[in-house]
Amino acid sequence: METIKGTDSIYRISQKLRQEGHTIGLVPTMGYLHDGHVSLIRKSIKDCTRTVVSIFVNPAQFGPKEDLKKYPRDLQRDIRILKETGADYVFVPETDDMYSRDHKTGIKVKGLEKIMCGKFRPHHFSGVCTVVLKLFNLVCPHRAYFGEKDYQQLVIIKQMAADLNIPVKIKGCPIVRESDGLALSSRNSYLTCEERKNATVLFENLLKAAGMLKRENLGLREIKAIIMKNILSNNSVSKVDYFDFRKPENLEEIKNLKQFRQESKNGKILIATAVWIGSTRLIDNMVV
Image (tube, rainbow, N blue to C red; front, side, top):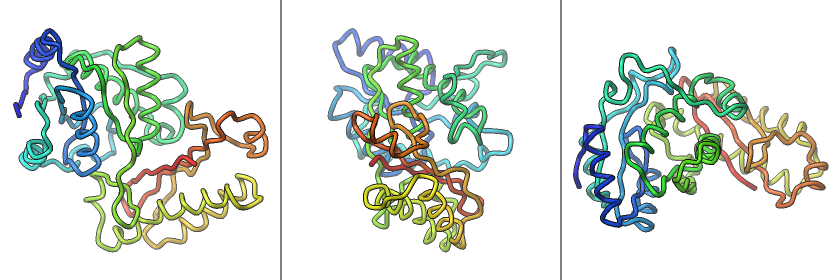
């Protein structure tokens, strides 16, 4: 595996690989890799002849009071994992290379960036889209792999790629969970032992809501009230940002379950939530 730091270098390499007929897969990450990232890398390796993993803690997607400085980092560990997994290249750019001093351009996907997590993190998805587009321009991948745990991010990036005619196939990959159901996340490292034990409240209540949708004759308002009460009764929960029922394809909120069932072609519902466990914000979702 080769480690690339310069933006010019990764572009030259990607052009050479394309000229040689390789199919390039890109897995964008912020490092501190876990088995969820590994699943994306393995999928890219299966689909493509060359896999590039980027590691870049993107300052543009962090708000002024968010955890940029304390975000977990361990590049040596990440490189070891990438070598063991079989990635071909790791791209580790410096912030100054990705964002010059006079950088003025950002990408917004209207509407989608203001709901769910975007309502509570106003500039987050603009930062995500901007850095992802920059990575697409530098790595020139044929396919890019994103986890479904960040479901809103996945939908937004697909929309950006479609709207801007970006010739990259966006591939969503299933959530990887611990044995007790907690979705893998780099931020799980922030949790205390007690908080880690109680963090399963997200998955447990997604399952409960899914069961209620299928079995009980209740409206979404009633289901949400029951679920919110359950979550907030957990000793480690400090706040719930949202618990939403939405259409998976476009994140449109579902307000009337009876009407949705009458009008929907596939009947699929995205249940998504963001919950603060102590001082750590975790997200999770489920499509039923």
